[in-house]
Length: 274
Image (cartoon, rainbow, N blue to C red):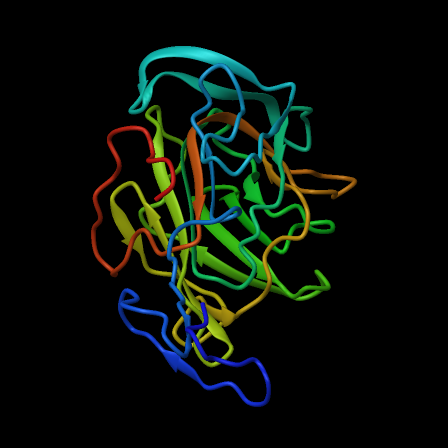
């Protein structure tokens, strides 16, 4: 507002106000406000209770292909119902879930869920970002003929170069109970991001992999296409189908778990809009 006698001719002097306006005489007042909070794309959340709807408020409902909802009593720490992937495992299967890109980009993030596998001796894909043949990012259940262990990988944007990180201790993933897993990427520093994997209450130290320290990988843009649970994106001969169950799934653009020791496994449904 302009006070009496103020003119719009020639130069105008603007005075910054840092508090509520007390008057409008002879100058214009401009106010700005910084707004913080989650926006669209900050989270995707599935409870897997009768549906595959995103309950985060970001409208990224999933598409369910041949998965079923199974009442398992006390099998899941989140309730009685889980999402079942009735694949034979390995190269045989038809069941998976896909959901729209949660727009992680290059930010810090946490990918977490509960799972159990019904196939003890085949390699299986739990999660991937849906890119190309293998996915730019994937969490894999590995079996080398005698041992079970966890793996994740990150590839370049062209999908050609894989940075594979293995975890060989404390990761016998063939369990009767649902186990919590969380893959965390820290904020970028110097063009790299430190990844941390947590499983069943413990931080896991990488046994091998790229980067010094291990799992310190180039920061890449994750996403741009639908993400997938239960299979590799498009490997024609062997999609590494997951045979098992998943309960609760959440991606958030923050480091939910920190440190290199134990952590508290969630005991109730994941929160909406962290």
